[in-house]
Image (cartoon, rainbow, N blue to C red):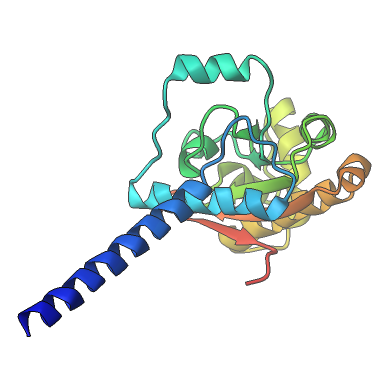
Length: 223
């Protein structure tokens, strides 16, 4: 009887150990190696999703010896995704996606707009670096979007140029969250229509970052 019970316990221990090793292997699978060239946008998306999960759980990955990482990156970069996001100090994609140097190609400006400089940077990232995924990440409490919603408001010349980019897509929205999503979709549409993005076959998605919860919600992907 005792021998039988010991056999059952041993079997359970082995099963739990195997499950733990499997879970660990799955987690490691979705850490990007900075030398890895990613060609599948779904793999890129999974890297970002898993990174945000780690961030929310407070389980950030180990960065490794930074000097060694810099030396590797000195030979070239292979970012697996392009992130277009706001310049807001609370919105740092390397942090909320829990990524390392060389993992993501980041473009930041007020309101995460797809202006000429942003589009040029995207063209370089997808055309020359072959990044297969572009994600436009807007965020809660975005001041640029809020400013664009104020009818008749005027700003300094350069800031006004940013507001003018945002206003057409949000002018009829009364809710800041809805306006933020509309601004994200507008940028996504502009990037999707870019000839070099089309030629490269890069996938373009939108996403929303909640500055309080830290959660990233992706837009335009099938569940």
